[in-house]
Image (tube, rainbow, N blue to C red; front, top):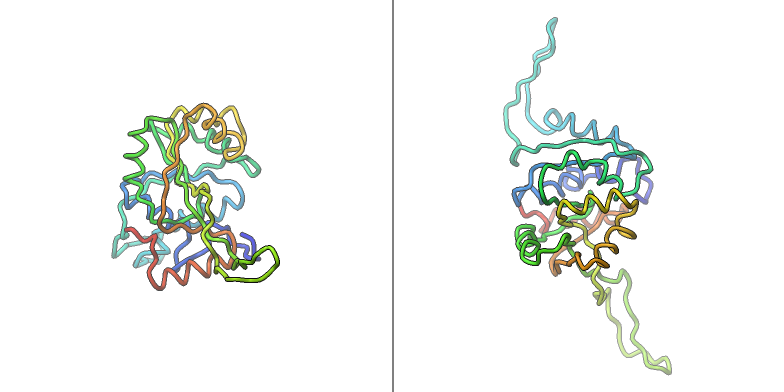
Length: 242
């Protein structure tokens, strides 16, 4: 993450939970509880978080003495069981190759691919219906974002006639939350870069559609983004669909 933290970006906390936990809760709310995490940079941080997930998030009693330490948990987690595979896909591996490296872990005919730091109130159940209806190989969620600055409106002579604060841009961008048919794995095996090679190739083949989402979407790339998300979490948290 840009901004000086040594914590791996996906583990930076919002509402006392790592952002990747929020992403996983979004999927879990729509019945998706099988996760494959493609590890690379600071993989040990990710492993420690998930290996200690129950110990660090649930009430427990420790039995400590001469025998091996025993742990009794007193409460459950507030989500269905998650099945999480942690797979080392290399330190410098590009995204498409990371997906190709976990092909053997994917036992379904279609699968979601998501970034670990974007949250949204996108209706994944409707996205699946849309994907099945169009019959193409791939669907990506497209969103619109606001310009981070105010706009000055002026005529040719330079006379200012108005201001617009952070207007919405007229473009659709890739918001992640992509749904692929298994055949896309073959393209990932042949290419390195997801955004510059695989997605353009799918578009060239006529096999890529967008699911336009006009609701909430926010990425977390900087500490400022974290502050924005933390503030939203304390008020309305639109992505909290669970």
